[in-house]
Image (tube, rainbow, N blue to C red; front, side, top):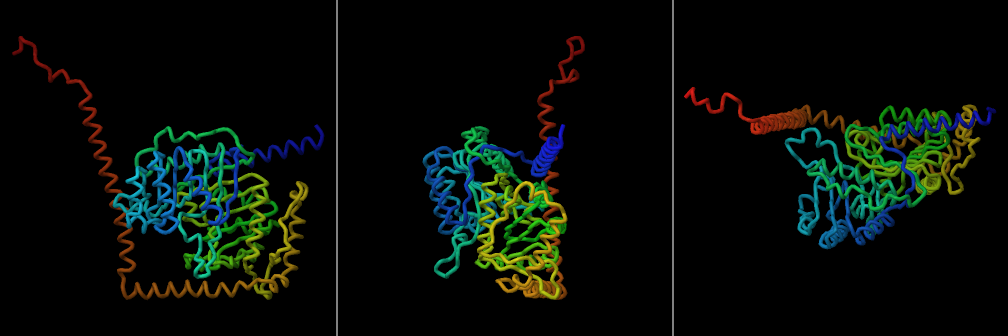
Length: 505
């Protein structure tokens, strides 16, 4: 066997190991033969949803964090009502907390009256206890068991912006998919549906068409509380990336473990970039995110803030070959507590398209840099002339020496970064730390004067947990008693209860 053949066998072995690691981390196999289209913002996602649902002939399954009682929510509800009256199987699962306004306003009652099945995930309950902290954060629509939509968008006109006030639509990303991946998507919906009541009828679990209809290979990662599937996969991808790792996240509050993975990748020469909102619909999260900038920047990670009203996308693209789109944010709530749903694509064409869109987004963003007197690695600013890196297999296998050279080149571009559309990290760090510090001081003063402010939440938390355990114990006792009664009725009468013989009477 010559050296080339040995290299090929080694490369094949490494690829098999990588595939095995990705499958085990995500808890999902790679499924080929899918047709995938990327959809951007409400301008592309919402019309695709409407058209597909309105033309449904078999079933519509929706799992949605927010189903809002607003103009767009009413529009989708009316379409669902019309389909349900036509005999289409309509199942809607919404999160109670995300859709509480619609829930309390009886928004879903007309759907029920039309024959649709509607369930709320984790409504307030004494028996739920600490499980109430976990929410169903998924955004998934399955039409006719043939077409799947997955995204970061919810059924809410918030994503359409406010043109009358000059506010642009929210930036977000989704996809439409047909092919064999419908099978795990239906299974994921059925699992969530069963967590809120009776199981979905088995006839709805089979995709309408299992034949390949495209070239895209993908995984469906359905995260449930405590499985941490997406967290394991995110860490693994950060370790596997060799050239680029570009992340867009709406609520970035990463763990120290994930921050370390990003920093190590950047130090090893990987072009790591993070795009987050400058202004967020949850303001305190943006403040906390800014406190994590400095260690990332010092390691060579490039951080950008979106200039528009809100960027809500949760996407990642690595080496122009791997990408993910879905509902999972880079924080503990999404990784460990919520139900989330993401599609991981292993397709150079789709990943390349998403990488190009990322570069386009950076043109509407501001890069955060370190002050020059304290700078470590400060990379180049993004510009319209910058292109997505493309490399040959040989270039992808560069040694650590060339990685260090690329790092040195980014340091040399510090001045250009400062001059062209970037701002110093201290300008964002100071307000972030100040707001957090002031909030903590005010909370401390409030608790000092009103101790019940600290005691009441703790009492409520302990009471909720205790009552949940008590209700669970009571249910188990009742189940035990019921089984004993069934067993007693099923047993034949014993000998000592039968009529005695005649000579003994």
